[in-house]
Length: 464
Image (cartoon, rainbow, N blue to C red; front, side, top):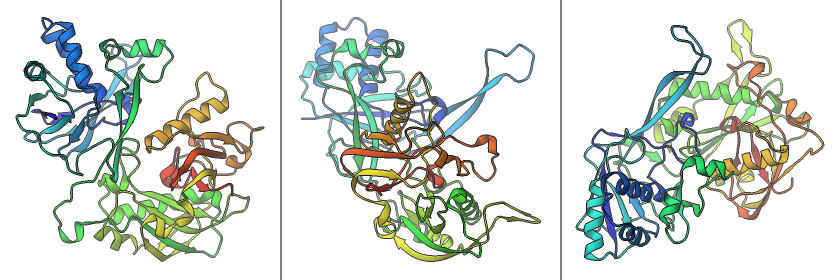
């Protein structure tokens, strides 16, 4: 038996930050995690129906302990920006403010989010749950006003539903209770978790949900051609393009593509990398190796979410890239000619990046994303890699520095330009070479860390 909950958002917006994300990452937890749903029921009991006996609620929560499936309406991301006074701000003065993002999803007001549990309820439990969900004032942040109800019928999930055991191309990581549901765990506050020096609430786990995206109505040249996720070019130039300055080429081709295409399409140019599992475009110069003096002889454009037919046409039309800016020439970026080599899936176009393999080694420096805390360098890098892998729904790996006697950055990474074309030297990221080892073979490409969409953090399978 199943029980299905339908939720609508009458204001057309959904705000919710996942457990391990910062609000300034601009990410939104979607669909709402099992952890969030059960906590919403407990909070509603406290504030809207305190007369319901606690043992009755506990029995209901236990019945809803299995992982639900979700059918989600179409959404589009957005955010607003707010400058809030910091601790140095004084009334009437300018400055001393911090930028804070308010990310959200725009949700159709007339479409339901369906949540279905594999649960068998008694008539009494069903009536209690029906009343409890109708009392839920919002789901996520208080801005996410909602209207929830139980359905009398239970639709049969298909491959477009988010499910924890299904096969699909879209993936998302959701926090869920582990084992029998205990209300005391659901009542745990963020402060209590932090005081306990934990990264997750007790008795919880990450669950990987997948689905097949619903097929959109076909509209000629705006169709996504799922067979083409990668385009590869061979490069020629009078002066060699050094691997240490390859980020300049990635930036330039990114700029040229933006002049030809819709630069607002998140699936191509990206807006929320971590939140979308990094499904937007990677602009990847491929070096001949990691050794000193390596050059770039190939350029790869990889869009895991797929390219549209007219995008493919425009992208393969990019034939030249240059650092010339009038009388000025960007140092390190010679005039480059691009010759189309292949289009297709990433496995067809760049098999050397794809594995699968247990061991992976840096081809370009890994640039850590997060600030170090009170940790050793090895602990810091391992934690940073673990988070990056988690965003891509990959398991943790054993991390080894290629130059353990050196710090951050190591001498190899210091030879690279670690900042983008519009940036200055002061924006250079720290970096180093790494070796990763998984318990089981994992598929690639493996592109991690800062500027991983512009050629940094490339790992090759094997010990290479």
